[in-house]
Image (cartoon, rainbow, N blue to C red; front, side):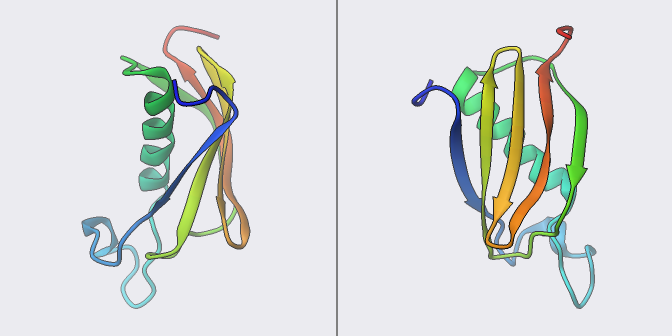
Length: 103
């Protein structure tokens, strides 16, 4: 595990990413599902491959624009983590992720 929790993973979604084609014409925004994929990637980078993950709580606060840098910040330990996705304008999304079957 890279350094234990809390820790962060930086990312950006390029302007050419296929998810942006219809989301939204003339003013593309990174879809929330792509942001959540980055959260899952961050958890699995730190905890290893997990079979089932749940997102019981997610709140989107601000959009992420293509080409802008953001980071997933995780806090917690298996089987439960809190996360924030942060961009230059502040918190973009926050929530909780749990390993399947664990409450």
